[in-house]
Length: 292
Image 1 (cartoon, helix red, strand yellow):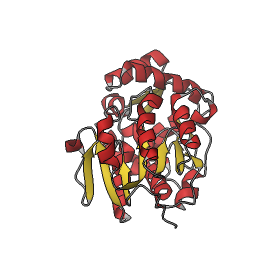
Image 2 (cartoon, one colour):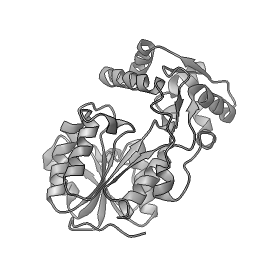
Image 3 (spheres, one colour):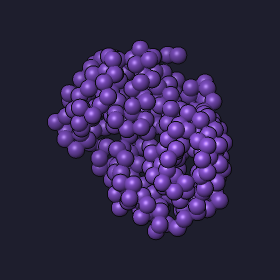
Image 4 (cartoon, helix red, strand yellow):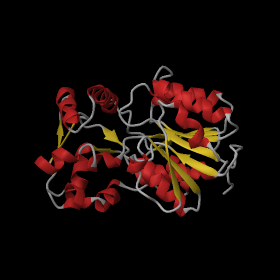
């Protein structure tokens, strides 16, 4: 695998949103691969200490943090923090700085389906990067399996139900560990440059089938309840999601009901050489999360 070195004045990888689900896994996998990693966070104290990882303060809304974060860096992994709706306004000022300092490679995590709407903020970020002249890889994951033990965990633990407005549609759920592994491959090789990859799991399942897999792994009955958008938004708010982002998620489930999340992609295997994890594997690994 050919290493992508760029010309950012060093050989470090800057990982942003480093306390998020993917960021934490990515840092772990990069250090295991022997890479020099710098983790950027608005609150460095919240970054779990990892041997050999340098932690710096970084805030997309504070341009004074950009230069220090980028010093000695030739590759950058970034995504929009969870809950943000104005991703273009948030990410592009930093991207302009990162790219102007040389030919740093950018690996950008967006979302499956954004490529079909050029007015969508994340798609506008993609287009900015595509036109910038910088080496880049765009990764577009579908819905995370990890939502089942994070955002959707509350009603499962409290009531044994999974209330989602997805009807009987199918989703090719992906494990965040496979997203991180795909990002590692994109960061460490130049053979994927100037390309975009949709990342999914190996199978498209209904939420009822997902609930059955969680039930089997955890040993407790978990039932999928096809809820309406208003009830979903209320539950998301109770889980700590902002009103604006809860409404955004509900709108996304409208597309899910139309079949937009059912496509299975070979992106993970193309990037990593390994098949993505199944929902059954994920459920077994996290089975204790759903026990009351």
